[in-house]
Image 1 (cartoon, rainbow over the protein chains, first blue to last red):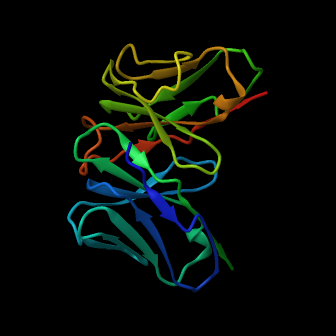
Image 2: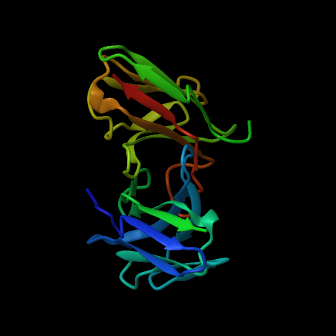
Length: 112
Length: 117
């Protein structure tokens, strides 16, 4: 079983601040995805990173995949209350095309 | 509908009762997944269907859990003799093509919240 560790588990910040959350594992992944889940909803895909060292930007969100494809980070610039939610990383192993393994998530609260 | 639809949204079951959770995937989606999400945790894989074939059920926690997708569209997750540890959100997801791979977006439903008392 591949374990994905996310940190921090909880993060509460003021509107306008920057933040970074992390997703780490000892396993190598063929790709990694980030999702955001709001209360009472299912996870929604934000991005997929595939290549080691890859950086993708989605408005104020910047996603990076580690060179060794074992870790990833999500950086949010000038956070807004609408960014509040549970951020989940999820990985596909190189051996399985069916099972997506999720981390335990980072619960982000952005205070106005 | 436009998205993955799940019912019921909320279910309270007495311990020992059987429950059935329904998932309507996006029309035409080949792949269907069930996940279990405990409070404060990420989703955990339960089972996977490609059309009507259940190709992976390695995540089902016990033989009390059973899933089917007889006509390759709607799926039902059944839990027999529910226990308190079964309390969780059960998420259904679908995708257009086979399996999980980087170019294949997975769409999740809102989940069925099960509380066993």
